[in-house]
Amino acid sequence: MRLLDTTTFELRNGEQGSFRQEGYAILSHRWVGLEITFDELKNHTAELRTGERPLSSPQADKIRGACDAARHQGIKWMWIDTCCINKNSSTEESESINSMFKWYREAKLCITYLADVRRDVRHPSTSAGIFKRIYSEEPSEWFSRGWTLQELLAPQHMQFFDMDWAYMGTKMELAGALSSVTGINMRYLTGAENFREACIAVKMSWMATRTTTREEDMAYSMLGVFGITMTPQYGEGQGAFMRLQEILMTTYLFDESLFAWTMPQPNSGGRHGVRNDKFAPGEWGLIAASPAWFRDSGDILTNPEQTETRSFSMTPQGLRAPIRRTVYTGKMKALDGAFGLLWVTIVGSIPAVFGFLYVKHKLNKKAKEDFAFPLNCYRRDEKGRIATVEIYMRPTAVDKVRLRNKTTPPYLVAKRIRCNELGLRMKPVTDIGEGVVLQPRPGF
Image (tube, rainbow, N blue to C red; front, side):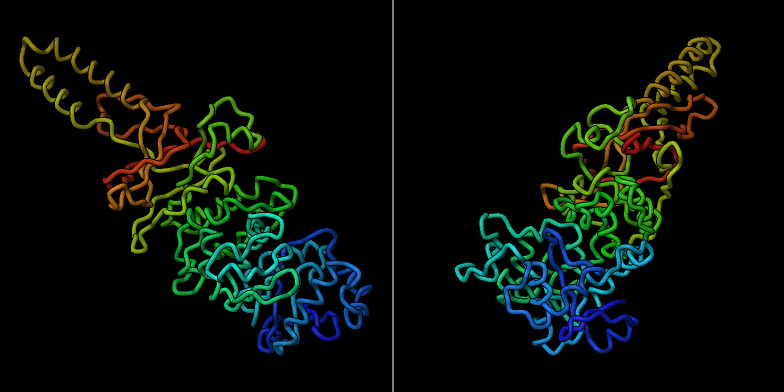
């Protein structure tokens, strides 16, 4: 880990554990213009140490302001992503991406600088208006960036400063306003409850309205939020978010809220570069193309006492999933039983043969019908009851049902339809056999 001395503005290499014992501050901010990088910092050291403010650039002023704020609170070391990471080293950049959440978590203090906000005393600390931009009614752009989500969640001690380095308050003091702007429940912001208890869909919903400069960072910036690691591969584009979800699918075996998303628009799939005539508007697979598809999933629940898991795994064709369903039920059983009684009579044997063929026809027809697939996650219905979330499927290929195996759920390949909605049901989930859900890959 490489840190900046808050007095000399010189960099020091060392073990993160040693810096943690000594205590270090860390800066959360939004990149603006040409930031001062690791290679350029040495050209600004003298100015940072002795220059009169304002310095030669807003970027230099930001480094000076952050170090001053830390030093005045007795903290010798400061970490700033712009100048403490050598981005010319892919190894160092990869290590930093996977370690960043830990670095923010273990900092003695996180200093958050809002470059587009001026503290307005007319707005109380509990009002979202405290974060209003100087020339807009919108909240600071800091709230719209992907990386700042983990920078908000990770620190145990966090202070906010406006564009003039005027103190605004701590994360604890501003929790109500922060919750209003971000949609994150106050209990996660205050530490009353560990945010890791939130399910995948809820965490994704926190990211849904955020953006990153590099497309891949939409996935990489969430690694710490989900407590996983992943090797960055800049250039993979939307594939990074697909890869993230595949890791989540095999890490959080009890959490099927990964699939509890809705398309913002019927043509949302086409906007993600999918060129595949198998998918009409409103159709997709189980894995979402973007965090934006979780925007309305902030109220999804999971059962922390869940003990049974269902298997989901990626294949070249799509996701292998427990989507088989029994078609030999209810009316079909009764009809088949009636024809069975005819079969034992001499007069009824011939009609019974045609009857069995009719049952077979009906079973195969039912096997090809659209159906609802319940997920192991929940949402409250209009009466406040906890109901199982379900999504909708359309078979694209189904094994034929034969009379001798009519009780066996047929193997099928399906795709998700009606992707703009999630259903609710009061029945439990089932696991009676695997099939495959086709999964489009962005760009293919």
